[in-house]
Length: 301
Image (cartoon, rainbow, N blue to C red; front, side, top):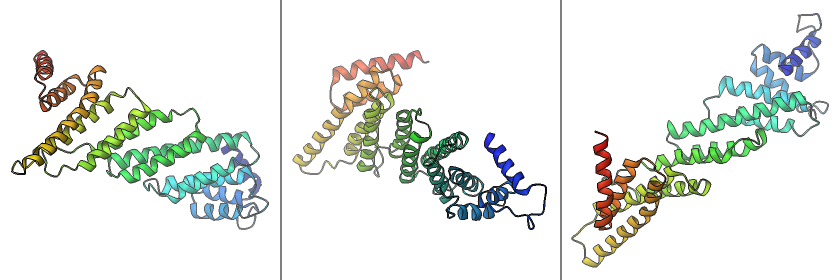
Protein backbone atom coordinates (compact mmCIF):
# COMPACT_ATOMS: atom_id res chain seq x y z
CA UNK A 1 0.00 0.00 0.00
CA UNK A 2 2.85 2.43 0.84
CA UNK A 3 4.41 1.72 -2.57
CA UNK A 4 1.16 2.42 -4.38
CA UNK A 5 0.81 5.68 -2.46
CA UNK A 6 4.37 6.56 -3.46
CA UNK A 7 3.58 5.87 -7.10
CA UNK A 8 0.50 8.06 -6.88
CA UNK A 9 2.56 10.83 -5.30
CA UNK A 10 5.14 10.62 -8.09
CA UNK A 11 2.46 10.85 -10.72
CA UNK A 12 0.65 13.68 -8.99
CA UNK A 13 3.91 15.56 -8.63
CA UNK A 14 4.78 14.95 -12.26
CA UNK A 15 1.42 16.16 -13.46
CA UNK A 16 1.22 18.93 -10.85
CA UNK A 17 -2.11 20.67 -11.42
CA UNK A 18 -2.32 20.05 -15.16
CA UNK A 19 -4.10 17.27 -17.01
CA UNK A 20 -2.70 17.76 -20.50
CA UNK A 21 -0.05 15.02 -20.91
CA UNK A 22 1.01 16.36 -24.29
CA UNK A 23 1.90 19.76 -22.82
CA UNK A 24 3.29 18.70 -19.45
CA UNK A 25 4.87 15.28 -20.04
CA UNK A 26 7.01 14.23 -17.05
CA UNK A 27 10.69 13.90 -17.82
CA UNK A 28 11.37 10.79 -15.70
CA UNK A 29 10.83 7.61 -17.73
CA UNK A 30 10.02 5.67 -14.55
CA UNK A 31 7.18 8.06 -13.76
CA UNK A 32 5.97 7.87 -17.36
CA UNK A 33 6.02 4.10 -17.23
CA UNK A 34 3.96 3.92 -14.05
CA UNK A 35 1.51 6.46 -15.39
CA UNK A 36 0.88 4.32 -18.44
CA UNK A 37 0.57 1.24 -16.24
CA UNK A 38 -2.16 2.92 -14.20
CA UNK A 39 -3.97 3.55 -17.47
CA UNK A 40 -3.52 -0.13 -18.48
CA UNK A 41 -1.37 0.92 -21.43
CA UNK A 42 1.08 -1.92 -20.97
CA UNK A 43 3.11 -1.50 -24.13
CA UNK A 44 3.84 2.14 -23.37
CA UNK A 45 4.67 1.32 -19.75
CA UNK A 46 7.12 -1.33 -20.95
CA UNK A 47 8.66 1.07 -23.46
CA UNK A 48 9.47 3.71 -20.86
CA UNK A 49 10.66 1.39 -18.11
CA UNK A 50 12.99 -0.33 -20.58
CA UNK A 51 14.28 3.10 -21.53
CA UNK A 52 14.81 3.93 -17.85
CA UNK A 53 17.24 1.07 -17.27
CA UNK A 54 19.41 2.42 -20.11
CA UNK A 55 19.55 5.85 -18.48
CA UNK A 56 22.74 6.30 -16.39
CA UNK A 57 20.84 8.48 -13.93
CA UNK A 58 18.15 5.83 -13.34
CA UNK A 59 19.71 2.42 -13.99
CA UNK A 60 21.51 2.22 -10.65
CA UNK A 61 18.49 2.97 -8.49
CA UNK A 62 16.54 0.31 -6.64
CA UNK A 63 13.23 1.99 -7.52
CA UNK A 64 13.87 1.74 -11.26
CA UNK A 65 14.37 -2.02 -11.17
CA UNK A 66 11.56 -2.51 -8.68
CA UNK A 67 9.09 -0.75 -10.97
CA UNK A 68 10.39 -2.67 -13.95
CA UNK A 69 9.62 -5.88 -12.07
CA UNK A 70 6.23 -4.47 -11.18
CA UNK A 71 5.42 -3.71 -14.83
CA UNK A 72 6.67 -7.02 -16.19
CA UNK A 73 4.76 -8.89 -13.49
CA UNK A 74 1.64 -7.00 -14.58
CA UNK A 75 2.33 -7.95 -18.21
CA UNK A 76 2.76 -11.58 -17.19
CA UNK A 77 -0.54 -11.61 -15.28
CA UNK A 78 -2.35 -9.78 -18.07
CA UNK A 79 -1.00 -11.65 -21.11
CA UNK A 80 1.01 -14.74 -20.30
CA UNK A 81 -0.29 -16.27 -17.09
CA UNK A 82 -1.01 -19.53 -18.91
CA UNK A 83 2.40 -19.57 -20.61
CA UNK A 84 4.73 -21.69 -18.52
CA UNK A 85 7.72 -20.23 -20.36
CA UNK A 86 6.55 -16.61 -20.14
CA UNK A 87 9.34 -14.15 -21.05
CA UNK A 88 7.50 -11.48 -19.06
CA UNK A 89 7.72 -13.56 -15.89
CA UNK A 90 11.42 -14.18 -16.47
CA UNK A 91 12.06 -10.45 -16.83
CA UNK A 92 9.97 -9.67 -13.76
CA UNK A 93 12.07 -12.09 -11.71
CA UNK A 94 15.32 -10.68 -13.12
CA UNK A 95 14.27 -7.10 -12.40
CA UNK A 96 13.12 -7.75 -8.84
CA UNK A 97 16.34 -9.63 -8.11
CA UNK A 98 18.34 -6.79 -9.64
CA UNK A 99 16.52 -4.28 -7.42
CA UNK A 100 17.93 -6.07 -4.37
CA UNK A 101 21.50 -5.35 -5.49
CA UNK A 102 21.28 -1.60 -4.83
CA UNK A 103 20.96 0.57 -1.74
CA UNK A 104 17.95 -0.78 0.07
CA UNK A 105 14.77 1.13 0.73
CA UNK A 106 12.41 -0.84 2.95
CA UNK A 107 9.28 -0.34 0.88
CA UNK A 108 10.95 -1.55 -2.32
CA UNK A 109 12.79 -4.44 -0.67
CA UNK A 110 9.66 -5.77 1.01
CA UNK A 111 7.65 -5.33 -2.18
CA UNK A 112 10.27 -7.10 -4.29
CA UNK A 113 10.52 -10.07 -1.91
CA UNK A 114 6.75 -10.42 -1.73
CA UNK A 115 6.48 -10.33 -5.52
CA UNK A 116 9.31 -12.86 -5.91
CA UNK A 117 7.48 -15.17 -3.53
CA UNK A 118 4.35 -14.82 -5.65
CA UNK A 119 6.31 -15.56 -8.83
CA UNK A 120 7.99 -18.56 -7.21
CA UNK A 121 4.53 -19.88 -6.34
CA UNK A 122 3.48 -19.53 -9.99
CA UNK A 123 6.42 -21.73 -11.00
CA UNK A 124 5.39 -24.34 -8.44
CA UNK A 125 1.79 -24.23 -9.64
CA UNK A 126 2.93 -24.57 -13.24
CA UNK A 127 4.97 -27.62 -12.27
CA UNK A 128 1.89 -29.16 -10.68
CA UNK A 129 -0.27 -28.38 -13.73
CA UNK A 130 2.36 -29.85 -16.06
CA UNK A 131 1.97 -33.12 -14.18
CA UNK A 132 -1.77 -33.14 -13.60
CA UNK A 133 -3.04 -31.69 -16.87
CA UNK A 134 -0.26 -31.88 -19.47
CA UNK A 135 1.37 -35.12 -18.30
CA UNK A 136 4.66 -33.43 -19.20
CA UNK A 137 7.45 -34.52 -16.87
CA UNK A 138 10.16 -32.47 -18.60
CA UNK A 139 8.28 -29.18 -18.26
CA UNK A 140 7.29 -30.04 -14.70
CA UNK A 141 10.95 -30.52 -13.77
CA UNK A 142 11.96 -27.22 -15.39
CA UNK A 143 9.25 -25.28 -13.55
CA UNK A 144 10.06 -26.93 -10.24
CA UNK A 145 13.76 -26.13 -10.61
CA UNK A 146 12.89 -22.47 -11.15
CA UNK A 147 10.79 -22.56 -7.99
CA UNK A 148 13.65 -24.15 -6.03
CA UNK A 149 16.13 -21.53 -7.26
CA UNK A 150 13.88 -18.59 -6.40
CA UNK A 151 12.09 -19.45 -3.17
CA UNK A 152 15.13 -19.36 -0.83
CA UNK A 153 15.63 -15.70 -1.73
CA UNK A 154 11.95 -14.80 -1.63
CA UNK A 155 11.07 -16.71 1.55
CA UNK A 156 13.93 -18.41 3.43
CA UNK A 157 11.39 -19.96 5.81
CA UNK A 158 9.69 -22.00 3.09
CA UNK A 159 9.87 -25.76 3.76
CA UNK A 160 11.49 -26.72 0.46
CA UNK A 161 11.99 -30.35 1.46
CA UNK A 162 8.25 -30.75 2.03
CA UNK A 163 7.58 -29.25 -1.41
CA UNK A 164 10.15 -31.57 -2.97
CA UNK A 165 8.49 -34.63 -1.46
CA UNK A 166 5.09 -33.50 -2.72
CA UNK A 167 6.45 -32.77 -6.18
CA UNK A 168 8.40 -36.00 -6.68
CA UNK A 169 5.52 -38.12 -5.40
CA UNK A 170 3.25 -36.43 -7.93
CA UNK A 171 5.82 -36.74 -10.72
CA UNK A 172 6.26 -40.45 -10.05
CA UNK A 173 2.56 -41.03 -10.74
CA UNK A 174 3.25 -40.25 -14.42
CA UNK A 175 5.34 -43.43 -14.58
CA UNK A 176 3.40 -45.58 -12.13
CA UNK A 177 0.12 -46.24 -13.90
CA UNK A 178 1.12 -49.22 -16.06
CA UNK A 179 -0.80 -52.49 -15.91
CA UNK A 180 1.56 -55.49 -15.60
CA UNK A 181 -1.02 -57.56 -17.48
CA UNK A 182 -0.62 -55.28 -20.49
CA UNK A 183 1.86 -56.41 -23.12
CA UNK A 184 2.98 -52.79 -23.52
CA UNK A 185 4.32 -52.67 -19.93
CA UNK A 186 7.67 -50.87 -20.15
CA UNK A 187 10.35 -51.82 -17.61
CA UNK A 188 12.25 -48.59 -18.27
CA UNK A 189 9.20 -46.47 -17.43
CA UNK A 190 8.81 -48.41 -14.20
CA UNK A 191 12.48 -47.75 -13.41
CA UNK A 192 11.90 -44.00 -13.75
CA UNK A 193 9.17 -44.19 -11.14
CA UNK A 194 11.43 -46.29 -8.89
CA UNK A 195 14.17 -43.64 -9.08
CA UNK A 196 11.71 -40.91 -8.12
CA UNK A 197 10.31 -42.82 -5.15
CA UNK A 198 13.83 -43.61 -3.97
CA UNK A 199 14.60 -39.89 -4.16
CA UNK A 200 11.55 -39.23 -2.00
CA UNK A 201 12.93 -41.65 0.60
CA UNK A 202 16.25 -39.80 0.55
CA UNK A 203 14.26 -36.72 1.64
CA UNK A 204 11.76 -38.43 3.94
CA UNK A 205 12.91 -41.80 5.29
CA UNK A 206 9.44 -42.63 6.66
CA UNK A 207 7.36 -41.79 3.62
CA UNK A 208 4.87 -44.66 3.58
CA UNK A 209 3.56 -43.86 0.11
CA UNK A 210 7.03 -44.17 -1.40
CA UNK A 211 7.64 -47.52 0.35
CA UNK A 212 4.32 -48.91 -0.82
CA UNK A 213 4.74 -47.77 -4.40
CA UNK A 214 8.28 -49.13 -4.60
CA UNK A 215 6.94 -52.48 -3.44
CA UNK A 216 4.22 -52.38 -6.07
CA UNK A 217 6.61 -51.34 -8.84
CA UNK A 218 9.06 -54.19 -8.22
CA UNK A 219 6.14 -56.61 -7.94
CA UNK A 220 4.68 -55.33 -11.21
CA UNK A 221 8.02 -55.64 -12.98
CA UNK A 222 8.15 -59.31 -11.96
CA UNK A 223 4.50 -59.92 -12.85
CA UNK A 224 5.00 -58.38 -16.30
CA UNK A 225 7.99 -60.64 -17.00
CA UNK A 226 5.98 -63.70 -15.99
CA UNK A 227 3.06 -62.68 -18.19
CA UNK A 228 5.36 -62.25 -21.18
CA UNK A 229 7.33 -65.43 -20.58
CA UNK A 230 7.55 -67.96 -23.42
CA UNK A 231 7.71 -71.39 -21.86
CA UNK A 232 8.70 -72.90 -25.19
CA UNK A 233 12.12 -71.28 -24.84
CA UNK A 234 15.08 -73.42 -23.74
CA UNK A 235 14.81 -74.47 -20.10
CA UNK A 236 17.94 -72.61 -19.03
CA UNK A 237 16.53 -69.38 -20.51
CA UNK A 238 13.21 -69.88 -18.73
CA UNK A 239 14.96 -70.59 -15.43
CA UNK A 240 17.10 -67.50 -15.80
CA UNK A 241 14.00 -65.37 -16.29
CA UNK A 242 12.26 -66.99 -13.34
CA UNK A 243 15.30 -66.30 -11.15
CA UNK A 244 15.14 -62.66 -12.21
CA UNK A 245 11.46 -62.55 -11.24
CA UNK A 246 12.32 -63.96 -7.82
CA UNK A 247 14.96 -61.27 -7.37
CA UNK A 248 12.35 -58.63 -8.18
CA UNK A 249 9.89 -60.09 -5.65
CA UNK A 250 12.67 -60.03 -3.07
CA UNK A 251 13.34 -56.37 -3.87
CA UNK A 252 9.63 -55.59 -3.47
CA UNK A 253 9.33 -57.34 -0.10
CA UNK A 254 11.21 -54.96 2.29
CA UNK A 255 9.43 -51.93 0.85
CA UNK A 256 6.01 -53.54 1.29
CA UNK A 257 6.86 -54.72 4.82
CA UNK A 258 7.94 -51.18 5.73
CA UNK A 259 4.63 -49.85 4.42
CA UNK A 260 2.93 -52.48 6.58
CA UNK A 261 4.89 -51.33 9.64
CA UNK A 262 3.86 -47.75 8.91
CA UNK A 263 0.21 -48.87 8.80
CA UNK A 264 -0.27 -47.44 5.31
CA UNK A 265 -3.39 -48.39 3.34
CA UNK A 266 -3.63 -51.67 5.23
CA UNK A 267 -5.82 -53.53 2.75
CA UNK A 268 -3.69 -52.58 -0.28
CA UNK A 269 -0.47 -53.42 1.54
CA UNK A 270 -1.82 -56.81 2.63
CA UNK A 271 -2.80 -57.59 -0.94
CA UNK A 272 0.73 -56.64 -1.99
CA UNK A 273 2.31 -58.91 0.62
CA UNK A 274 0.03 -61.80 -0.35
CA UNK A 275 1.07 -61.39 -3.99
CA UNK A 276 4.78 -61.13 -3.18
CA UNK A 277 4.86 -64.19 -0.92
CA UNK A 278 2.86 -66.13 -3.50
CA UNK A 279 5.50 -65.21 -6.09
CA UNK A 280 8.23 -66.36 -3.70
CA UNK A 281 6.42 -69.65 -3.01
CA UNK A 282 6.54 -68.88 0.72
CA UNK A 283 3.36 -70.70 1.76
CA UNK A 284 3.65 -69.93 5.46
CA UNK A 285 3.90 -66.15 5.03
CA UNK A 286 1.36 -66.25 2.23
CA UNK A 287 -1.20 -67.93 4.50
CA UNK A 288 -0.42 -65.55 7.37
CA UNK A 289 -1.08 -62.36 5.42
CA UNK A 290 -3.94 -63.94 3.43
CA UNK A 291 -5.72 -64.69 6.72
CA UNK A 292 -5.19 -61.12 7.92
CA UNK A 293 -6.47 -59.79 4.59
CA UNK A 294 -9.56 -62.00 4.71
CA UNK A 295 -10.29 -60.91 8.28
CA UNK A 296 -10.02 -57.27 7.26
CA UNK A 297 -12.36 -57.76 4.31
CA UNK A 298 -14.90 -59.54 6.52
CA UNK A 299 -14.79 -56.69 9.04
CA UNK A 300 -15.67 -54.25 6.28
CA UNK A 301 -18.86 -56.09 5.31
